[in-house]
Image 1 (spheres, rainbow, N blue to C red):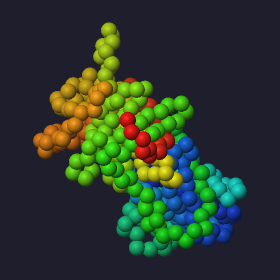
Image 2: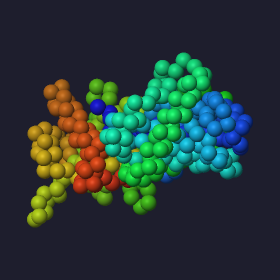
Image 3: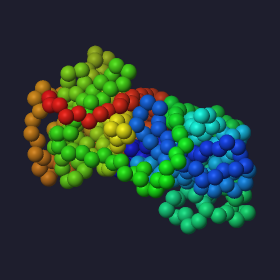
Image 4: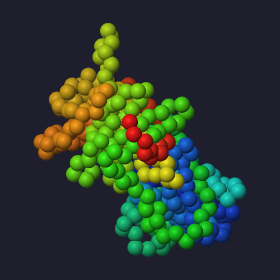
Length: 356
């Protein structure tokens, strides 16, 4: 049930990479990339040059590994990454080298069912990281990879594109370190009770505190914003902490509810990224969530001890998964995104030792 997290963090898995003073002499090179305004990082590497126009790159980050078949265009690299579950394609553009660094820009577009069906018929040797035995391509395989890339490019250029979210922008510096591909994954999110994080950006600030931990990967926590402490139930792995905020407003014109997924990602230089994505809920979605009881999703002045029973824990997990399902359905529907909206905020966090 991590597909929301995968949707959002797959933007970071689509990096395309490399560096190159000119298009005829690509040596294997590593780049350390950091997203502008957050602590999301990845390490990218040029693996193989097939000819003066096409090459293969790999990426390894805290969220996984991927390959990218790339086209060289006037010292700019372009690649396309499909995410069929959400009907989107990620277009990654690696700009020309400037002072030993490159800008990586990732744009995301939603495709129609017909466009997706066209692309699904095409197969890439590099679509599954774990199945790659070697990087050599026969003449036919190279032609197939080029055809697939050009087909996606043609579909995007010949039709109106629906933009999904803002572009993601990264700064990538040449890495001369002889670092193993596993080292990039050494940073993980380790949470224990009473961990507290102070988060801030552009005048917006928040506190996150872990209150209780259950079955290794479930937690009770609160977020503190403008003096209010909001209780939540969350799930975490070494890759991220995810939890929801369900807020209700009461108006004469009718009640409203907003569902926010909050994600805290592993530290880079002691800084963590805190992502919030919010959508309004329909009456049907609100009624669906009302079927589930919860001890959380509320503001408190005094923090109680919960000590959830096994039955209570199961119910909270079921509600957490239902929220994931609802938000996933919104993201996966062009009509829902337009009607219900989707806003995002990113804060930078540091672990704190102070009390309160």
